[in-house]
Amino acid sequence: MSATPDLLRAAGVKVTPGRVRVLAALLAAAQPLSHADLEAQLPDADRVTLYRVLDSLVACGLALKAVDARGVFRFSASATQREHGGHVHFRCTDCGGVFCLKTSPPPPPKLPRGFRLGAVEMDVHGTCAQCARRTP
Amino acid sequence: MSATPDLLRAAGVKVTPGRVRVLAALLAAAQPLSHADLEAQLPDADRVTLYRVLDSLVACGLALKAVDARGVFRFSASATQREHGGHVHFRCTDCGGVFCLKTSPPPPPKLPRGFRLGAVEMDVHGTCAQCARRTP
DNA sequence: TTGCAAATGCAACACTGTTGCAAATATTGG
DNA sequence: CCAATATTTGCAACAGTGTTGCATTTGCAA
Ligand SMILES: [Mn+2]
Ligand SMILES: [Mn+2]
Ligand SMILES: [Zn+2]
Ligand SMILES: [Zn+2]
Image (cartoon, rainbow over all chains, first blue to last red; front, side, top):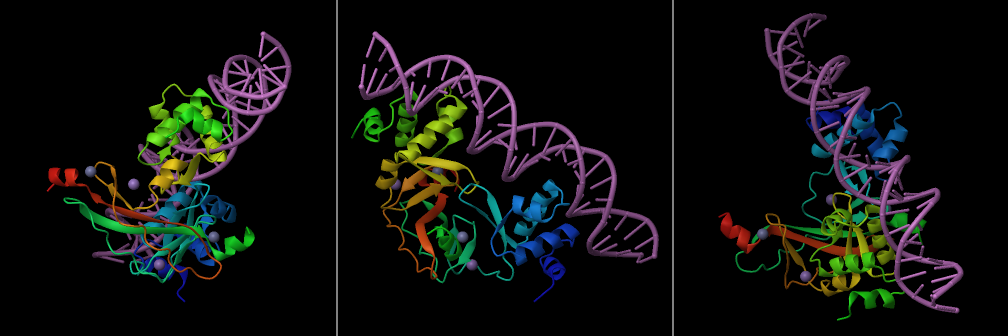
């Protein structure tokens, strides 16, 4: 397993204390974390810098961003995977977690004449096992 | 098709001008509307009342509430939702139009143990025929 | 018609996220 | 190691979304 600074260097972004600490927190978390969660966990971090650090981690592919059921963004480390195109994802509407499924993406549907297809995305959502256990 | 006040009465809530107008707007909409959309469409409605009207429609089962990708709540009439549940939609990224396709929704994928499926949505987007003609 | 619970309007507030800008700093190359 | 520079940070101010409290109005049923 690589150290957090190495992950940042490999992703091509500057290694700063903020990024190291936030990425480490995301890697250690069992659930996707909101900005507020991270702010509580890193009390001396600046609010705005925290938003920008999270955005930079998402932009360089080290983190994933999703919206939870209350409309708040939650972030999780995408750690190793670079290949998320070959399968469908499941989004937990409770915790905001994103999980890789084994299902292949659906085939592009037939479009009316003249329409140009950009992309097909499948949004599979519901409750993950951990959240389902908490709310039976 | 029933008139909007009848729908409200049948749902067991008081018939007020705000509820009639908001429910009518939701029923007429081709896509789920945000609070901001409705505020623009009903300029003399109070902001807070609009939130409360929407919540009351959701509470009595006449409307559905979902979070969009930007973290904003969007509302749709339950009847409308059922009507468009049997087929996939195409979203034009140029003009923002939404078109009904003939393709059936994809079958629910196999989930890991303990996961609970909420819904499967397919986002098919690109350029519609009219916009494609304008930008070859 | 009247009484009352429910709905409304308004002001104030909390939370989430963004932007502009000056100061600090991580990296690069000498 | 040092200096140059492109990023990143910290701070203040702001915008958008949604909520709460409370006095007033109103739908509806008795
Ligand atoms: Mn994946
Ligand atoms: Mn449709
Ligand atoms: Zn979950
Ligand atoms: Zn179009």
